[in-house]
Image (cartoon, rainbow, N blue to C red):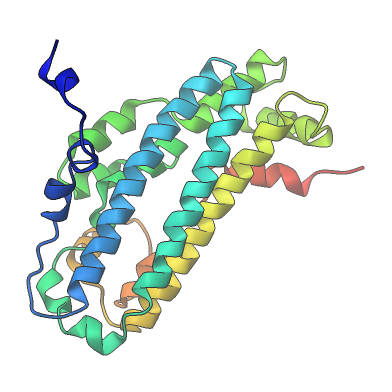
Amino acid sequence: MSAVMERATTYGEYLRIPELLGLQKTLTPAHDELQFIVVHQVFELWFKLALHELDALRAAMRGDDLARAAHLLRRLQALVRTVTAGFDVIETMRPYDFLEFRSALQPASGFQSVQFREIEFLCGLKDERYVRLLDGDERLARRMKESTLWDAYVELLGRHGLKSGSEKEIVASVIEVMKRPDAHALGPLTEELIELDELFSLWRARHIRMTMRMIGSKPGTGEKTVQKLVREGYERMGSAGVDYLKTTLSKTFFPLLWEARTFIRR
């Protein structure tokens, strides 16, 4: 019998609680710095789970397991709502409290979250410039080569007898699905994907408001990284920390699903 079977594993051992609680290392005496670190580490844990579920969702879609895909999408929606609610905690920190430790963060920035970029890539928002800006991170480079959630959806259209060879054909096929949201096999899945996309858009909007509340129009701590992105010719933006974030508001994972809604007629 193994040592693991000889005695019961404790709660702390199973969850690695001592190691987990040892990861919060503040750089200043500022009271609110611990809160800032904990919330952002929790964000990264949720992102890890999101990637786990997105990988499973892509596999379910490619396997035509629509029931499991819908279940995973609902879980992902709940997860994004939970992550967005994390801003409630951050916003209890006042601007002057943030300034007590903000300079110690530079040049670190949430912009550098590799896991969030992985989520974008996996959902279909790939941009090779992020791979270069994040020093050729191996995870992002791998995601750059992988099929996406959108690819899996387009494959589903084809397997269900719908045309998907061009964007025009995809939009027409999605319209056919959306005309029969309850009767068509892909109807519920299509609406769940839209819901997920909308929730991520709301997360972006809430992120901007939180940033404005904390720093107003000051440059962000990751200003140098953002300016590298500007030099790459990515987006027009000013010097304020929120300017870059505002340019992300128009991003959607599944733009053709949104486009199709314009042409729904009875």
